[in-house]
Length: 413
Image 1 (cartoon, rainbow, N blue to C red):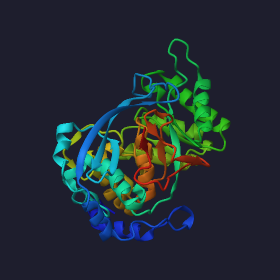
Image 2 (image 1 turned 90 degrees about the horizontal axis):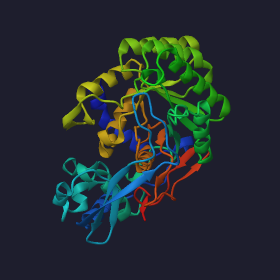
Image 3 (image 1 turned 120 degrees about the horizontal axis):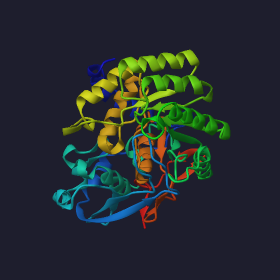
C-alpha cells in the first residue's frame, strides 16, 4: 500500500480503532467519554484565565555513558513546564518550550474551541497541545487515554532507554562490561524487564574490529545475565551494513526484540540486513525514523519531519524493510501522533515514539499507547524530577500500568 492509499484510509482507520475499544488480552477497555457532545459543552464552559511557567530538573539514577555519536555522558536535563488555569479553577500542565508571548494569545479562549474530545488540539492551538490533553482530562475527570478512545492496552511494555556505553566510563578508568550489567541491574530492580543497549562503539570510540566485538560481547552478556528480559539494540546509525550483518550473525541466538537505526536508512542496505537476519534466524524488528537531517518549515502532517523523509520511511515499511517507526514524540506533536497512528496500523507498521531525555515524555507516550494503540513498546527513562509526583504509575511484570487518574496522571509538587 502506498502513501496515497494510506491517507485515504486514515479516517476509516480512526473509526475502526475507536470502535474497537479493546485493551490487551481481549478485555474491554474502560468507558471513554460517554457523551461527547456534553463533554464538548463542558469544555466550552471553561476559559483560559492564567498561565505560569517553571523549570523542572530531571535526574537519572546514575550517570550514563555516551552513545555511538555522542560525546558526553548523561545525568539528566532541565526543561520548562507550563500550567494553564481556567476561570473555573481547572488546571493542566505539561512540558512546553514555547515563549510566553506566543502563548498569551490564548488567554480568554474557551477550552472547547481549542480542544475537541474526538480530534484533539485544533491546528492553530498546537502550542498548547499536551497541556490541553491534561487540562481537558482534568475538566472531564477522565485520563488522557480515554479521550483518545482507549483502543490500546493499559499495561504498556516499556524498556529502559538508559543503557549507554557504560563500559567505557569513567574515561580514565573504564568499568568494562560489568558497568553495563550494573546499569541493567539497577533498572531491573526499578521494574524494567526490557533493556535497549546502545551499539556502534566502532563509530568513534573503539576503532576497528574492537568496537563491534564489544557490541557483541555486551549483547551476549546482558542476554545471559537477564534471561527473563527482552533485549533491544540501538546503533544510532553508527554501523556500516557490513558491521550490522556481522553483528546479527554473531547474536542471532540472543532473541533480540528490536534493532533500531543500525545505519542511515537505505533500501539496498536494509535488504542485505533483512536477508542476513532471515539466514541466521534473527527475528528482531527493524526500527527507524528518529534521526532527521532537515527540519520541516512549515510543519507537515508529521510535524517537524519533512515529507521526503516520511515518504521514504513509508516506502521502506511497505517493503517490510522497516517494522517500527520511532519518530520523535515532540517533533511530530501529540495530536499529530494521534492522527497518523491509523495510517501506520493500516500499513502494518508499529510505533515506538522516541522520548529521550525528559521523564514526562515516557508517561505521555504510555497514555498515547493506551489511547490509540499500535505502540509496541515505550521508551522508559529511569529517574525523575523531584518537582513531579509520578506515583499514579507503577510497573507490573515489566509493563507500565497507565492509571485512571484524570489527564496525564502526573502532578506538580
